[in-house]
Image (cartoon, rainbow, N blue to C red):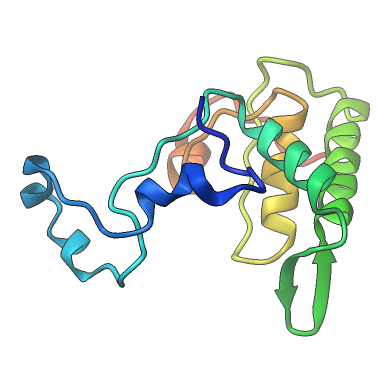
Length: 141
């Protein structure tokens, strides 16, 4: 099985240069990828929160985000995502409820996104379609 977080990069060697296949004509942007950027990725068969858990275990003090002087490590990212997941549960959000996350590109977005995933509540949808769907819980006021 492919391990994207392996400390031995030999399993990534096969993806070290741009590779093209017959289906790539339908995706012309691939030819503009810089050298070393893979055209295709083998993705692990694990739920999304596994990736953050695994990364924070292996690289807790590495910087996950740097935003206008704010630096957040993977350990801090995981802590904040778990706090958000707990907050959702304390608000009474249950598995199967829909949660709309409408934020700009700020560090709080991935925290909320992964936090919702951590609590197994989030169904990936873009912000516009999520807000249009009936059933999203309103903000508690």
